[in-house]
Amino acid sequence: MHEMAFVRNVVDIVVEEADVPDVAEVRAVHIVIGEGRDIVEDFFESLFRYLARGTVAEQAEVILYRTPYMVRCKRCGFIFHVNVFDRESLACPVCKAYREYKLVSGLEFYISKIEVAGKEPSESQIPSPEGQLASVPAGDETGQAKQEGTATA
Amino acid sequence: MNESRMIEVKRNILADNDRAADVFREARKAEGTFFIDVMASPGAGKTTLLLALIEQLRAHATCGVIEADLESEVDALKIKEAGVSSVELNTRGVCHVEMGMVEKALAAFGELRFDYLFLENIGNLVCPAEFDTGAHVRVMLLSVPEGYDKVYKYPPMFAVVDALIVTKSDYLSLNPDFDMDALYRQARVLNPDLDIFVVSARTGQGIDEFAAWVRSCRETAMV
Ligand SMILES: Nc1nc2c(ncn2[C@@H]2O[C@H](COP(=O)(O)OP(=O)(O)OP(=O)(O)O)[C@@H](O)[C@H]2O)c(=O)[nH]1
Ligand SMILES: [Mg+2]
Ligand SMILES: [Zn+2]
Image (cartoon, rainbow over all chains, first blue to last red; front, side):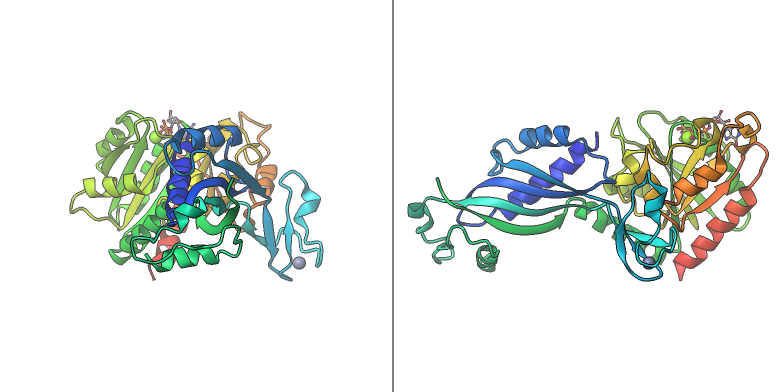
């Protein structure tokens, strides 16, 4: 049942990140989850639906990316995937060192990005409380919009 | 409909808990307390092993135990009966321990401080592994009656711990199918540096070695 704790944090972070003057709604939330994280994906989504009610993210689609276990070879530094069920996969493909590595990914759990929709043009021309125009162009994918938004905060 | 755009977020979902855990770890270190998180399935022998371990440590050090349980106070009382300070951390049905609970449990000790502080985590091989508890080391117990083939069922637990303690080794003669070599091999797939101990609180086998490891971990962590 720890999905509850996770999703609560997800909703909090999304709402905080979307708290930019010109954002009207969050359309999608992209989440990266290592394969080692014990997550029931369907349950995760329905919990999100439930906990996001009444927030800007209430309509958002949840997009989960599962990342595999990756290890770094202690001998040569090569990074490769290990399959827990396949002994052959425990040898470094470059230097053949067997099970001499450190886990570098597979346990991550973070929100990578959110897709947001801006307000109607008429709305976004209204000066923000700081007296600045919230004239961030829609469709800007560089993340610049967010920086401008937070710089005034 | 309005055009949409992406906002880069890159924020760890458990960042708040992780940050609180780091702060807790540092604070315990500053006051000389070495904090150990003990995880296992129900009945694996956590309380029994802690009592055997503390028996060895207490001659030269002070020890305290946080007993995390879904409901009861049974284990906390067992520890107190042995003359060891203990507080009950009742999670009221929550499957894991988060930092807020650990901080409250420590506060329940009042002014008491210890050289070794143990957390007997919730009996569960899945959920506790997901949350940093602010411990300096985390260990996992697997009892012989549970069977050796747990690694593939609960890989993250094996990945996040510093040591695996195979408990109830006195059962080995009754369970000839317990494949110790396979367990060692599988347990180290995601964690090649994992330390592994085989112990029995019943016969005392391996308890000295485990206690020596705990002491040396404390020395390493406290510098
Ligand atoms: N034979 C044998 N039995 C043991 C050993 N260690 C513990 N036990 C028994 O296993 C049972 C469970 O032990 P506990 O120490 O209560 O286990 P626990 O993991 O703390 O259990 P919960 O807190 O209820 O999850 C008890 O009956 C113990 O006497 C051991 O080394 N050998
Ligand atoms: Mg117990
Ligand atoms: Zn290599």
